[in-house]
Length: 342
Image 1 (cartoon, one colour):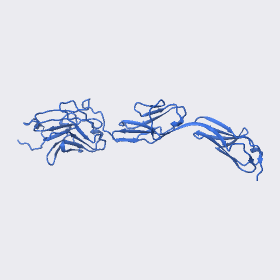
Image 2 (tube, rainbow, N blue to C red):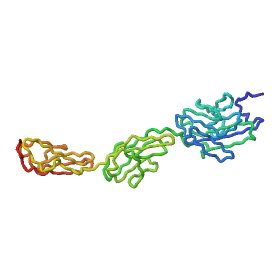
Image 3 (cartoon, helix red, strand yellow):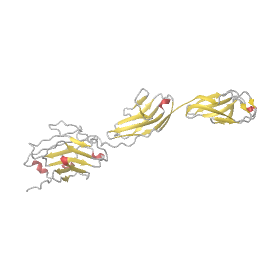
Image 4 (tube, rainbow, N blue to C red):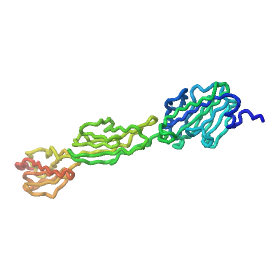
């Protein structure tokens, strides 16, 4: 019985003509081929070289026989019928017959190419191509397998990375202490970099990175360590930075003073404002005293209208940082006397 040209018939492999059987198995991140140790290696060319989830990919055998009469693609490391995706015949137009493993997203192309659209993580794995040519001198079988563990699936398709996060996103730390930040990212990120205020950070005696770079520990904190910290993650197809996490270094109060400096001459009936200034993170609380007595006045400024001698004397400002628990007091020079109101 004469078979219809182009029909699928597994028995045809044992027909009266001699054929060529080429097989290739591709695996990687997502499909990264590598040379196999075979007599006549078959190279599978991927376009693009690093497919991504949601994208498309074309797998094509390099330099296939020009006179091939059919080729079949399998989603496995072997040419099992149950894993056959499709078989194509190089007619004009090209004829495609789908197999049991066809999902509706695979199509055949010129040169025995396999096109897959809308990639998912399930598309990761071994792929085998068989090419049959009637003019080949014999049946040869060559294989290219980069998965050294046989048919086990070991790597997902490369994905477009989601934005990582830095935790905690707000850090308040004392000088000379330690803080730790964590970069939370997709496991498929190949690289993790740290930045402070947009500048890259490198490991040092004080900046300690974990083996996967996802944890940053800063020792013996200085004021220069304050800033906006980000982590940047990358893989072959994408790179993205986190939103900044803010580190605040608490210190002070220091350089506390009262403005205007003394000696201060009071003018009867003229309001006077004293301002307490301090270098402190966070901003300190203030309390005022006069001649050693608490005035119950708070805030960085003290304003009064001297009407009696009770306002004459030495003014004290006490600046207190609630985080460092440090208090610093300063005094103004004594007010020496009165000027009458003009």
